[in-house]
Length: 608
Image 1 (cartoon, rainbow, N blue to C red):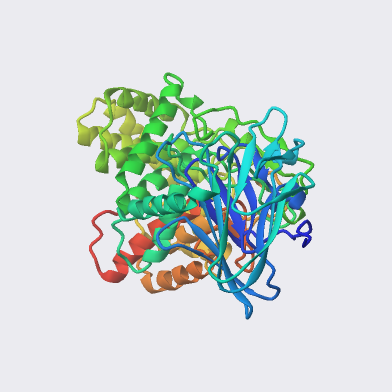
Image 2 (image 1 turned 90 degrees about the vertical axis):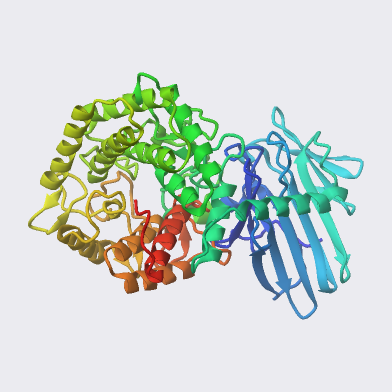
């Protein structure tokens, strides 16, 4: 038996993702599932070798073809992944999916199918389930032809196989030789799930293909970058809870924003600030139902805080829970040795005033293009906006969840202005009762405050926070939320300053942490992918369409081979941080739709 215990960690961008809108698994280009939380997105992992070694849990399925070319592709218009090996001896492909069932409460069902397309190949399989982030002792036992994985107090799993398997070191293992057109099937699911049967994979595959293709067919995007936009849409849908309607920030936890650094966070939760970007992206592509579902989830969070708007959290569990204690997993060595590996997220207790602006922008867009707000919904919304009137000029930690001192951040001021602006617009359009005089007076006060206190006349650009001369990638949102014209001379000088200070080959950093360590953490981080796409859109809106087009094409080349993006880029445009990152794909969709209209000479009928 080939030794599979020493497989090295794969790069962050050497992964595809499969999912069923309840959980998700990452598969590297060696054919190994090295990350899978089960049964929910944010449940403890059962495979976690991406953050350690195969001993932390892995599902390996690989042909014995040394030197073969490996590639990964998605079956067209789906989230069904194929990993392929091409060599002189054989062509082998593995098809991976999380089955889409009719019942949203069905537990995830992982299906792996290996086929020899040409020639003859020996294939090695090893399934090592390791419960609770590899902290719990998992035992593998035979149950007739199946293998059961159990750990005390945790949900068990069952592996069914079309070929005989053995048990070694509490893992299911097999080695088999397949001729041309022969294959094998493996199914992993809940211990008592009747669907865990290797004989039903054809039907599961066809149903899952039909689901993804039927969903994507609703898209109305027909622009230049249809393949990349569609892939982004599919990634966003995969990260969206089918049951709750919320969307994850990313599928993973603990992946580093700097090699070997301490910026290793858990992003398997839902951030309020992503709301307006989510609604915009889904609306632009024609997915109105997803935007409406997300807004229902958001309204639930606002209702939870009735009478206490400041109690709205910046992030929640995908089911709406608010307790997300941040802890460390010291037994995991981390990706590339980056420690500590964290689960939970301490940012849940931070004060970030910008979230009210993103929330209100989302409410406004859905009311304009989707479902109208209810009486109770407007009542809660008024409470939020009234609270903004009281708190807009306070300090906070800002959009980037800095763990240093609080400041008067420009972005927080900007989004408080957005909250007032969108509330006034919505009340006017829907003839809703509102204290217009107070709201408008506050909106004007914030406007004057930004121009008076965040514009640095000596430097000739806006600054990150009061008392600073630094720039910030979140400034790129100023024209995108209609606070300042994209061709305003002061904005153009700020854009030019951002280009000089934060942009490197089209990759945009959120801020510089060099000496000041403003975020309270050691070291620096990579370039932020969402900021990079915002930069493209700002260039296009400023009339620099040719430059925007070139920068956009470069950014597209920095995707991984499957068209996916993590959170950040390193200096060579390799991926850093948790993956795939929803905000990166939301920003891509926004930039692609606007830039395509510009290049096509179309009139911009909707330009938020």
